[in-house]
Length: 243
Image 1 (cartoon, rainbow, N blue to C red):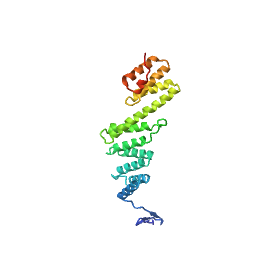
Image 2 (cartoon, one colour):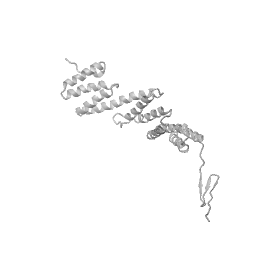
Image 3 (cartoon, rainbow, N blue to C red):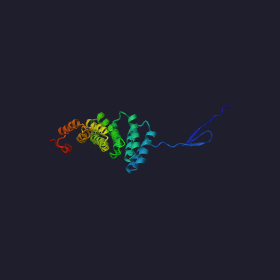
Image 4 (cartoon, helix red, strand yellow):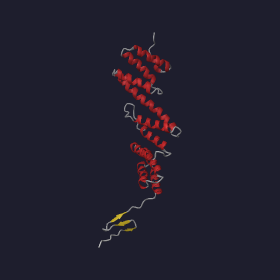
């Protein structure tokens, strides 16, 4: 005769056939999870708050509250300076909730994660380029978003920053008399960053570089370009007078 095994659920303890007891933790209501997470956030315990907001997605994956929990988790990570974690969380949000109304904010937050990591121009690891891409995507996709105007300001700052990085490198090349490399970088500033404050200096440096390698016609061409486009700039005033 076959043995019949019975399992009894008593309280929150599952009693197995072998007599072993398996403890079952009752699910915490989502409202209580939110309340606990926000309390940690209000106390500026951002790392704990991020974890608690993330736990809501695990406990209630199909809840309509999950997108907001992910947003708060990402923002908590950002406030904790955990930029790598915040970027991962925003990526997850954008992957699973691409049509959500808060996508513009997530793009802005992801851009800010890169923006906050932009370092000194001499040690820039490339975060400025990543930040620029995020803000440009935001402005392109959501031009009427409340975050678009701020993103435009950041784009202007970043373009000047990136152009400044190229100029810094070009100046180093000139000091080392690496003229070919310097000329290439200076020309890229003029063509790729015309709206920044750098083209005037780039034109001035090009007159110096071409003079140094014995190409006065090219040097004179950039001098004329500088006088035509930036007649009142300090760089135009530095050009030697032609007698």
